Amino acid sequence: MTEIAKVRVRVWDGPTRIAHWSMVGLFGLSWWTAETGRLEWHRWSGYVFLGVLLFRVCWGFFGSSTARFAQFLKGPREVVAYVRGRWALAPGHNPLGALSVLVLLLLLLAQVALGLFAVDVDGIESGPLSTHVSFETGRVAAHWHGVVFNTLQVFIGLHIAAVLFYVFVKKENLVGAMLGGKRAYDSQPAEPVRFASWVRLIVAVVIAAAIAWVVSRE
Amino acid sequence: MRRYAFLAGSLVMAAAVLAATPQELQKQRHEHYEHLGDSFKAVRDGAKALTPDWAAIEKAALEVEKASKKQDQWFAKGTGPEAGKTRALPEIWSKPADFAAAAKMFEDKTPALVAAAKAKDVDAVNKAFREVGGSCKNCHDTFRAPED
Image (cartoon, rainbow over all chains, first blue to last red; front, side, top):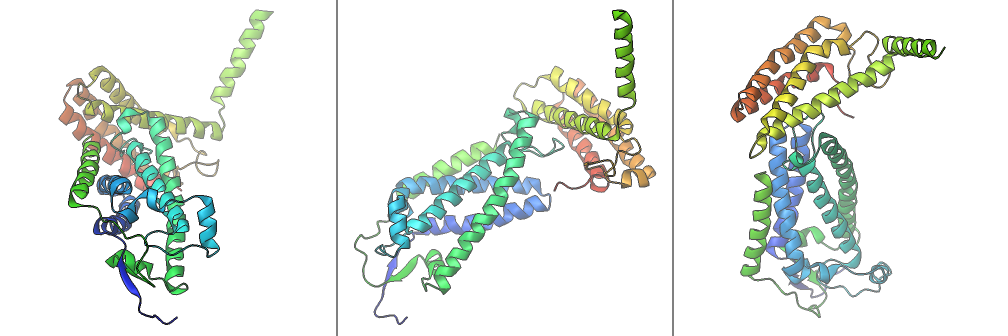
């Protein structure tokens, strides 16, 4: 495919990209600290993860346009249209990719929530909110924390495979876009991307950090 | 006639308990450890409260101490993996001296937990909790199979 006078458009803002790659790092850190029994570090990884996830949720409501759930979440008709190739390429998640974003965010939120209540088999290591539930409930939370982890592995694997498919088969450099924020389009998009102000960024960061901090102090 | 039926029934039940199968003993052991985990959690959660319920914490600490003293009764010969699903490893029976030493470490650490609870001392409870937890790990590392 030869590239003819393509336009480079900024799609993803800094906060969205930082949130994405932080989650990649935190997932790896959470995984490793759990595997190696570093539960104190695991909990801190979880608190930071909670903060990042809460930020992303806030940003999904009042962040830059491409980060907003209202912008990229579409119904089944749009997903089918996209798969059939009858979808005008526009900045941001396509309707199919949008589903994976939704599923991954929901799974990650569930994982953090379960971890907050989880208790290990000896009653020694536990999440900060586990004092509010019984040993039995904490053990159930721990079990599902493990189940959701396995589910996440599957969906993250799918996500990576899909992205690689886009990069190498469809020749759409999604990785570059999520790193530098920009990607090439044939022409200027019909709807320009609207980027959120510093004020909104600060509000989202404060909300997310405050909640994560309170939880970590439990 | 009914009197004799009751006596006979009691004897049968007593015999059943005394002649518990390895699988039943495994189940009882599992329940003992579940209770221990529950009590251990209760100690830690209790000490974290703004106004600790010291009566409850002491009660839970005593349960932990009791478990540490009775533990040797939970590992009858034949109740290892050969009898059924259990996380108890064969080393418990093949290395009895090492197992006894690990069990003794647990038994030696629990009185401090009870004492701290009786003294209503949060810092002492937390310290003793970590010490006992260390003794749990010490045994589990060698004698309990990892979670699958």
